[in-house]
Length: 235
Image (cartoon, rainbow, N blue to C red):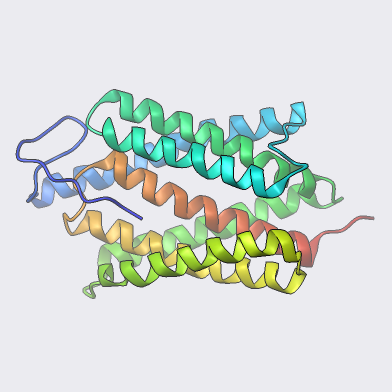
C-alpha cells in the first residue's frame, strides 16, 4: 500500500518524478537498509511487551482494534507528511516499535507452547523466504505486477472487515481463512511495492519502506498464527 511521491527536485529522503537506473537502485537499496533497521525497534517493542505483560484493551477487542487503527493511521499521516526529512525516518522507527508492542501479545501466547521459540523462528524463516522470492521476482521479472494494486487493496479492505466480524463470531475456521488469504495478499503486496521502486514509480524510500514493512509484518503475524494453531505443542 504505497503512496506515489510527486516532487520536482531531488531531496535527501525522496526524489524526482523520473529516476535514472542509478537513482532507482539507490532508492531500492535505501529501502532495504531502512527495512532492516526497522526490525530492531520491532523486536525491542515485542521484547518489552512480553516482559512487561503489555495489553492493549485486551478486555475489549473491538475498542482495542479501533484505537490501534487510529494510532496506526496517525503514524501513516505523520510519516507521509515528513517523508522527505529525518523526522519521517524517526517516525517510521517509532511506528515499528509500536507494532512490536502490538505483536507482543501473540509472541507471548506462542511462547506458551513448549515449541514456541521454534515456531517463531519458523515463521521468521518463512517470512524471509517469501520476501526473498518476491524481491527477486520484482527485480528480474519483465512482467508488470503493479496493476494488481487496486485488487490487492480491495482484498485488504475485505480482510479488515472479516477481522472485525470475527471479533464477534470467534470462528476458528474463519480465523484460518483470514490468515491464509492475508499471507497471499500481503506477499503479493511485497512484490508490487518493490517492483514500483524498481520501475521508478516510488521515489521516496521512507514511503516504500513503510509499505513493504506493513506487508512483511502481516505475512509474519499470519504465518505465526497458523503455525500456532497447527503446530503448537502444550506438552
